[in-house]
Image (cartoon, rainbow, N blue to C red; front, side, top):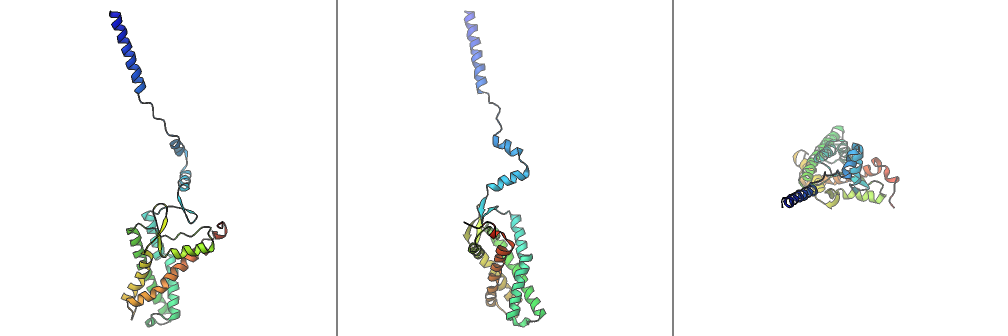
Length: 232
């Protein structure tokens, strides 16, 4: 009888040990993808990330951070693009003698230039505030390798659209129009002599062509790849 109980006890112990061995969690293997990722250099990891980005105008689209938007705002409002557009508007005003109280001499030109710079800064602040509030991407993205008509379309659409979300899809927005009107209206209300907000609306007729002209300059001068890989 004692041998029977001893056998039963040994059998029970063996079964318990077998069950414990089966239910013990195995060491978790490291996923193959993680091992490969750890072996990549920073440059290779960045290249791998870029491969998975959406394509906008035949280039990978990287959604801008707030810092990216702020840098673009500084460049657009106070950098070379701002000086170029302000110079164009001042020359137009000098040629057609807009703001007649300033005259058409060099001091008059400089007053027009300074007024255009200030109006451009106001528009830039309004643009940056609206794109931040509505989570828009107002950066201008030249069309890489596009046909001439697609480049022109891209330049025109930039004044009535913005990009949104991680895929950079384009949608209609009032941000460019409101911001471009705000600068001339405030300028003609506050410091342009013998002027009023209505004259500011009229003066805005030079803002839109100046911005579109700057976009076309980027498309056909700064972005020279439109001959490299033409669209099919």
